[in-house]
Length: 291
Image 1: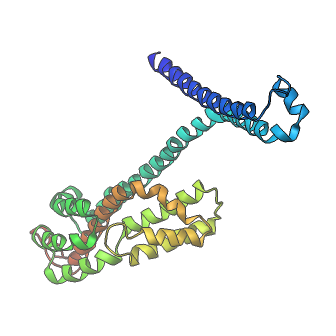
Image 2: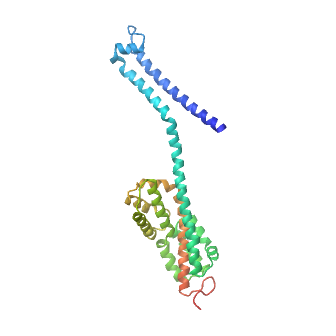
Image 3: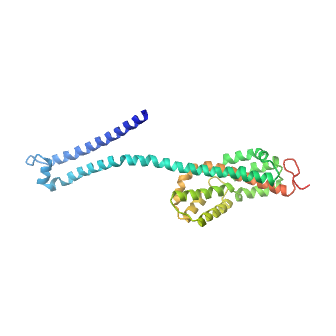
């Protein structure tokens, strides 16, 4: 109730200020008209205008223009305020939906695909695997860079997972740039989101093309923070979407960059454990090859 009263009071204050400004402007124009008149003219302003239209026409039209502008402002002010306040909230709701969708995809890939991979292919319990690489995951989350996390990943993979150095030196180094599943997921979801936001109707083949190029972008994107932004801009321009819409997701790009970097480096370690297991090296202190 108090909030409603405060809102009404603010509306009345704004309306009063507009009325005051209009009154000052009108008074100034009427003073100009009276200053230009003489004692022989009619005492009625409208009569003066009829008697000598050329003398007062510009001043009166200026005054009527102020009256029209004031009336238009009063008429459209509520609609303008509604649109100014409602548009950011509406866009924020869309961006939050994108954030939830991408994070859900990251979670499914991390705890679904990777867990099944280390369980069936590397013969490691998923909880034990994630517990042993938690230092790498925290480093990736804080730096948002696969390249900056690479030294930590090399050390943890050898000491905690038992992957030999020669395998780490190849798999993790190549994976820091070429194995970016989280980046591919994020790029595809973002392009589709901005296309829907812009009202661009994409065919099924165009959507498959976006998924294909997102995978290629995940392979070639540099392992540094926000490296996928230029690729997304190119994708938007390719499919006829305004590239300026990229500004809408810049506010949440950092948190999504941190999360997808965790997914990227976890995928590198998952691949390293599988390669080590397939070569017959012991992992976690036990033999994983065929006995």
